[in-house]
Length: 264
Ligand SMILES: [Zn+2]
Image 1 (tube, protein in one colour):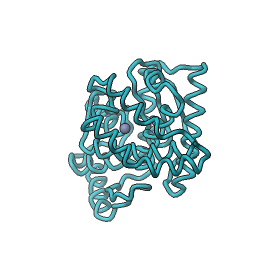
Image 2 (tube, rainbow, N blue to C red):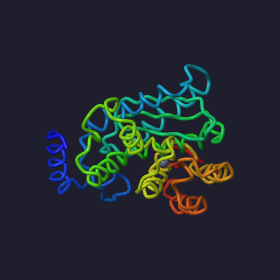
Image 3 (cartoon, protein in one colour):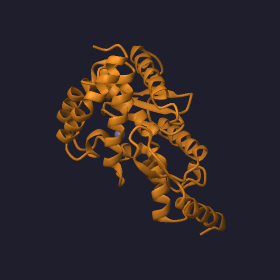
Image 4 (spheres, protein in one colour):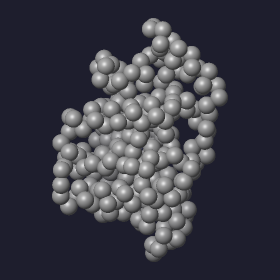
């Protein structure tokens, strides 16, 4: 172990004893000792790396649509959780890929696949998907996974150096921890808990933005039909039916927000 990693680990261990905080909106207590600036930097590096391997749609009606919905969702999340520490500036891209998937990374970066736009069908369902992704960022799931990973693996270069300087295995590990794991077929502990939490936060954010939360049920039914077990949205959750039941349980709260935003 190089000395500076040792120091980094020591700082992390001490920090870990006093670094529990609560998730905005759900109140769950979580461990997070990763500095925001470091997570944002890593989020940016992971985003650049992912985009370098993908075809980003430059223009078109769907690009404008995804960006319009994305901006409305971000504004809603900032209004609903003003102390959530969400970034002010967001980059929202549409990626040409038939797999119905989407992701969000720390520092305000969202990627939506064209396959997800097709599967969602309407704006309400697409807003629920984007809301789910912003929910991951709001809850700082990447930082929580990174904190656990650092304690688990020890020392390591995770998060302490530039991504491009890491070996391939470490790069994949960092990308997975950052929330881009599904694209790589890598799953981590806490995934299911994080998915449920992002579902809940995302539904409230979408409803508060005036998107109909009842579309979540149809969205997950379509997802279930499409499911091949390799989608982030399916593979990390126990059973789609459980997910639909969970949505029904929180629907009255979402409907209140939806009606307050002018929905019928
Ligand atoms: Zn998710």
